[in-house]
Every structure is written in C-alpha cells, then in structure tokens.
Image (cartoon, rainbow, N blue to C red; front, top):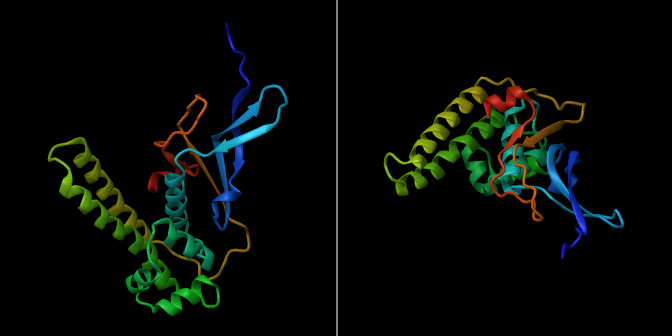
Length: 207
C-alpha cells in the first residue's frame, strides 16, 4: 500500500533572511527550502542550511566590503566571531567604553581603528587554527586544509590592509546575496555542511 505524500518541499529562488538579526539586507539564492502542505497549500517550516556557517560568511563578506561599518554592523561582526567586546577593544587600541559607544552609534570608530578591527578579526582566527593544528596528524587531509586556510587568511589580511574605507556612511542601503550548492531533497532538507558563498564574484574570490 502506497501512502500519498502529505507535503512537498520547494526551493525558494530568493529568500529575504530578515530573521538573522543582520543589520543590512541579506538575500539567499536558491538555497532555502520550505515545506508546503500538499492538500491545503499552507506554507510550513522554512529551514536555512548551516546557519552558523552562513552567519560567519555574512560577517566575512561585510568585512571585505569597504563601506564604513555602522555601530550595529560592528556589533554583528564581533558577535558572529564570538569575540567579547573587551577583547576587541584591546585588539584595536580603544577603551571598552568607547567601543560600546561606537556600537550603540553614539560615537564613530575612526577609519584607522575600523581597518584595525577588520584585520584583527581575521588574525584572531590563527589562534583557533593553531589549536586545531596541535591535534591533527601530520600529512593528513586536515593538516592540508589548515595550511590552505592559513594562506587564505594571510591574503585577506593584505586585501583589508590595502582597503580604502569610506569616512562617511553610504546613503544607499546595503544588500548582500549568498548561495550554497547544497541540495538536500529529504524531509529534513537541512544540510549542516552547506558551503555558503557570497554572490559577488569579487568578494567570493577574496573569501
């Protein structure tokens, strides 16, 4: 006896990801799947694959975008990498109080301090890589991947170091688009290993 499907799963061509807490527009292209009741047509559960990976990809992409960071964007990037405000303040040479005022948009972070913030966040990732490197076997695939990531981080550091950050905020709202090649067709349609990429080719190559 065959049981008829009670629902169908569809891929959303363009999904406005307003629930992520990101302080600018994020559009996900052909990556989000949604369950729809086959009888009623009622829209059900929406799942974004590898949500943690997406948040990090958004934060990295925003750092590589030379538009001046708003206070809410600074807070978003910091939290995306799970960095305490006191630690970030020490990295960029400002007081925790000043950083807090910048995040609440009572003060502005200087262009120099902002560039330092962007570079420091990437350099901070080396510490994580060193911890992983201590436990991986020599000659393993993991060690090879770590070497590639280290090389990528160094290149990104150079890109940011040469970046010209605007001293003023852009009046045009920022919209960033992302996609993933993951294509899970099962009922859970949630791929924890989905590899997110920015839709902008220049930023994708840099990241």
